[in-house]
Amino acid sequence: DARVTQTPRHKVTEMGQEVTMRCQPILGHNTVFWYRQTMMQGLELLAYFRNRAPLDDSGMPKDRFSAEMPDATLATLKIQPSEPRDSAVYFCASGPRGGAGELFFGEGSRLTVL
Amino acid sequence: KNEVEQSPQNLTAQEGEFITINCSYSVGISALHWLQQHPGGGIVSLFMLSSGKKKHGRLIATINIQEKHSSLHITASHPRDSAVYICAVRLGNTGNQFYFGTGTSLTVIP
Image (cartoon, rainbow over all chains, first blue to last red; front, top):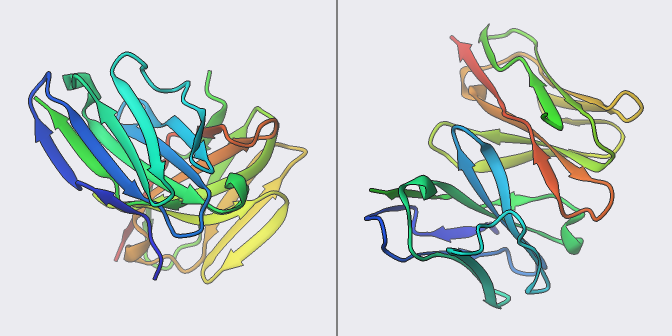
């Protein structure tokens, strides 16, 4: 049963610390999205990759956030330094066909920054 | 201004009732997704629509492109349908930008 895998599921950290979240997309999917969900803003697109190349990261605060895809089986989202306002659930989603098809979401990484 | 509006925001129904959740959008789209999120859980894609109607079990999704409107129907609702239902539209220009509705929280009472 193919699924998108995210780690960690839960992370509590102190302000100023570096946080790295990882996503393993479904094998064969060539698009990967990073989303953030908060009570206030709902779901927001942070970054989008197609064939490992970043195509859109306009939703991401560039000064502290970075997203990469070192290979086709791993996408990472890094926050350095973390701030309390970064507390949210971060979802990774992957899809086939350049993102024109269904989206498959991971379980999410719940981040709390104290 | 929200590009995607959902109604109602909250909905409580008795088990067995027919449920409708609505989504209206104001932008040109290439596709519309209905997503389901259980409390504390991940997000599951229920439907992707670009026209017409799709059915999966007790769930039916319709879209009217001219009216920029979509509905998600649940027939014979069950407590396990309790979740947040989110409408998401994919913009028609580049296809990689999404706008999300704020979600409809559904509670089905036994």
